[in-house]
Length: 446
Image (cartoon, rainbow, N blue to C red):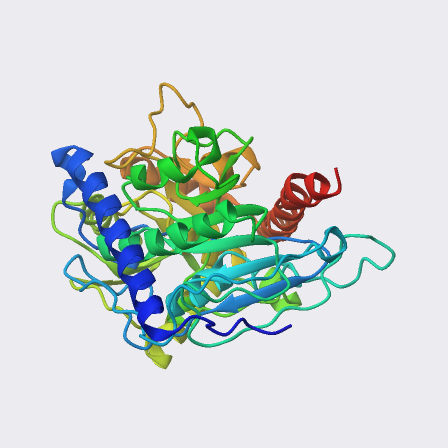
């Protein structure tokens, strides 16, 4: 597969670039002006605070990504990030390719360097079993045989033999929304000119679930995006054309793919629980620390608290964190900006049962009265074998019960957690694949 090269002369290319940028700016400004004051100022959250992951199939699949060195890494930008400046030589040419029905193909388009990390977490690469590019379904008409990657993918570059596309977009904060909007407007032009047939989006949503800017692009609202897979809870989720996707592990901090081992299951774990992370004043994390210290459980658990968030792990801190997960029966998962956090999935990787603070955080993520499984709807729907608590005052009783559980019971619990997590990832892979095939490929053949 090859990438399309720009075919327009520079003056026309720049004109298209300016038009696209102007329309994106107007879209973002309209979104900002319509947003309530409580959500108009969205600050960039710390990844550790509760960003506590994502995937497809077709005849062939191309995985394209952009590696822009001037963009902040995922989870490290700020609200003051400047608007992205796109390279002059790579702007908005409309491909003249017209695929035939026999050439139906699906591309997954990653739109920023940070999206490579997102794609890893959401299962587009290694964190789902065999990724989603499993070539093992010989004999099937819809199988994925290969994918490609490439640097500097910006609006104007789709694989030359693709007529269906999945865009992986970042909507965490204002600068990212601006850039994502440019991609959507470019893709809209291709759909309107019949260069593309079907479009889906995997969206890393805002931690406050303030994703209203995306609504205009959904086909249910007259737009062209037929399927949306969104990270974090959202009242939009209906399992018809909008689906929840899990956040997953922090690959941007080099959290690895973990293979279950005999020792992981059967070795005795010396700690009742663990918590390694940032503790903010007047937060539930502060209340958690107070409870652990008051009752002496901090001596039975691996606790390492810090006052300031660190964006990157050192080799030593990553090893300490992994050791804490591996040597603890429970992993404490307090809510941050959002209830869902990386720590939940990382604990599952090591067979350490997550103890999750099951509270709805501020924003537009839904409400527990209307959605009884909110927050963490997807995990609860899929039967996550976690310990859910509403208040950390419940923790002492949980830890006292842990003391009474014998080694064999803990081994069985670890097996169950590891098996559930593997099943969870496999089911997500199949769900993503089936949804895309039924929505895109069957429509093409019909």
